[in-house]
Image (tube, rainbow, N blue to C red; front, side, top):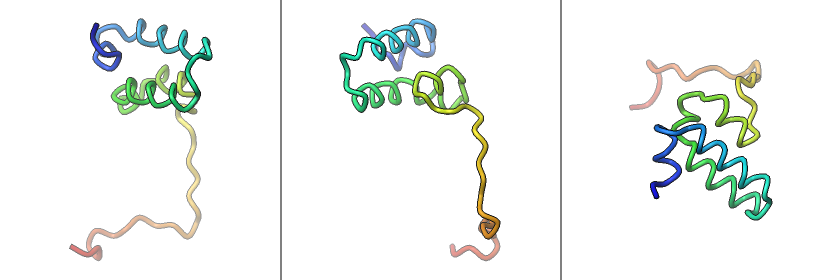
Length: 80
């Protein structure tokens, strides 16, 4: 059997169903499940796949607030 990560490209629905079943079963410790799920879904998270965020209980399209004193580094003054 191919790894779950490899299956995300070809059968994403099967992978999500499998991860949901494992999560509901409670047989895996939360940290262990999260590690497996993050590894399996890492490419889908990079592709901004909402279902990948949901299975990991991440908020998709979460707003980010930066402090008013924060500014982006200026590439012209950044050290080489």
